[in-house]
Image (tube, rainbow, N blue to C red; front, side, top):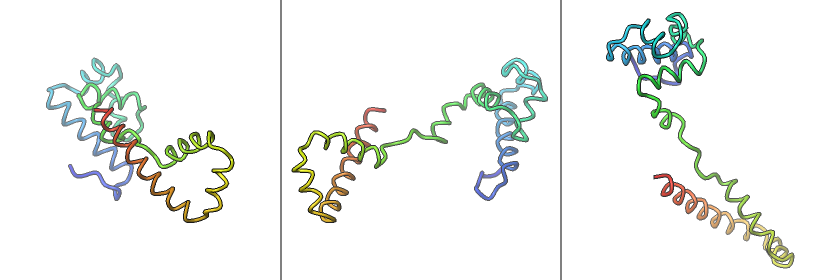
Length: 137
C-alpha cells in the first residue's frame, strides 16, 4: 500500500481505498460476507464494487462508518472558513445605512480609498475566522 497522490488514476485510488478498508475489516476479524451482509446490508458482490469505485456513496459511507472512520471525513473535507466575499457582503450591508454624501466621498478618493478598504477587509476576515475557530472548539 502506498500514499494516495494526484499522479494516481481514479481506479488506482479506488483500489487503494478498498485495500485500506479491507485491512480494517480483517483487523476486526470479519469476513467479507459477514461485513457486507450484517454490517452494511448489501451483498458481497455489492461490497466488492468498492474496489472499482462503482458503489453508491451510501455503501462507501456505511463501510467507513462501520469501520470507525466516519470522523476522518472532517480531515478530508474541512468546513469552509470565512471567505473574502462574505466580508464584502457584510460591508455592503453595513454601508447601506450610511448617507449618500459619505459614499460619494469614498468614491472621490479613488484607488487610495480602495486599497485602505482591502486592508480593513482582510483584518475583518481574520477576526471573523478567529471567532469561528474559537466558536467551533
